[in-house]
Amino acid sequence: MKKIERAIISVTDKTGVVEFAKSLAGFGIQILSTGGTARSLREGGVEVTEISQYTGFPEMLDGRVKTLHPKVHGGLLGVRDNPEHVRMMRSHGILDIDLVVVNLYQFEKTVAKQNVSLEEAVENIDIGGPAMLRSSAKNFRDVTVVVDPADYPLVLKEMEELGGATSLKTRFRLARKVFLSTHRYDGAISRYLEGVEM
Image (cartoon, rainbow, N blue to C red):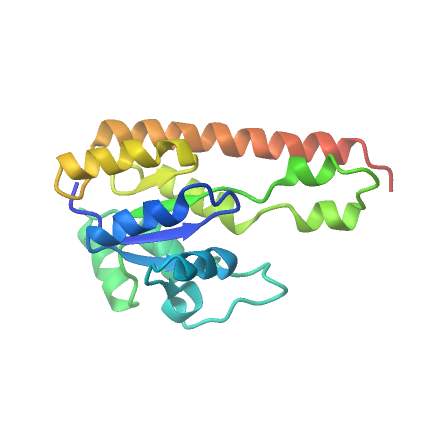
């Protein structure tokens, strides 16, 4: 894999994310981010490009639409050694996004609260996060995806050893972890909704 050049970081669990982002910046990686994560990174001294600045489209609908954009998903799903993909990406100003660091809205924590409303529960169903995770994991041959802060040290160690890149073996292992995570997440939503009467 080529050296990682561009990353999206958008996390609910911010454990260790500032330190991780600082390490990524040390590799010369451009960091794209959203909302609260971008704020936390800036406060921690990390230079960040807002997703809305990259896409040219504002975050909207109370934050429901942030990363659902072809410049994001094209950058994640484009196959780097497919000349037609590369041509189309370049013609539409879509840049490669090589690393995705995303964890999801804490749905289970929300619905565990006493007297939580259906409306509050629904607003804590993450859409953009799972979409980015699945796009990245599907394209694991070209994209490194991190859903668990416990994997930050592994990724950094490998990048140190491989000159800013990660191995296919690691990317595949991390992709499997993503699909397990999104499976569990959807299961939690399904179980909650099954108990709701309309």
